[in-house]
Length: 243
Image (spheres, rainbow, N blue to C red):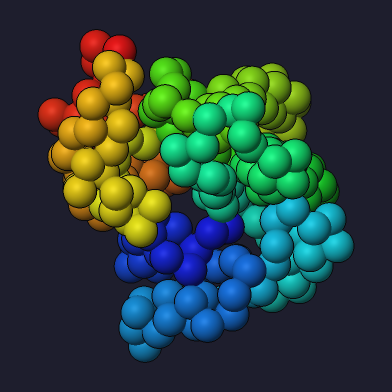
């Protein structure tokens, strides 16, 4: 599981560990990963692995570590992501800022899926499951969010290609599109965020644990069944009718 040091990643890691899964939690900072492992409690098998998903060498080491520790890989939750510069008009976005969002959200997801494919194809019994963290922004954008929105739309294409390419190897791939889970990334929604009509509005949020329960359901299906796309959102958020 990537991006497991906080927010949705931590909530999902705790849900999986609580259900008896052995979980490798990855992220750029060791401290938050160790906090996630500690929060799982004694008896839980949670392995912190420092890895930057945008660095191919880190991703290779991550999957080698998982295979050495557990002998196989049954689930990848491609969760790591960054929003990028908030509220910046597209003409003012620096190339480096654009590149960072693409490298983490899209290239990082690809690299991790590639690593998972290599393990899942070779193991016996063959197969496994990949769940990609999309977003409501995989469907509709927010104002001034071009980098994030572009990568999340691309995530949908990645999910579909992984699903097709994984069929011969019993590798299932689905996507969960999340709207307004209460995390550090969404903190500004509780104080007022720009809407399509130019006004600021406070938006409702939901507990990240509600997302975790959905991911757990997707993860525990037999490989003969797959949730291809699921949308989990704060009920009253301005998504239906956004704009």
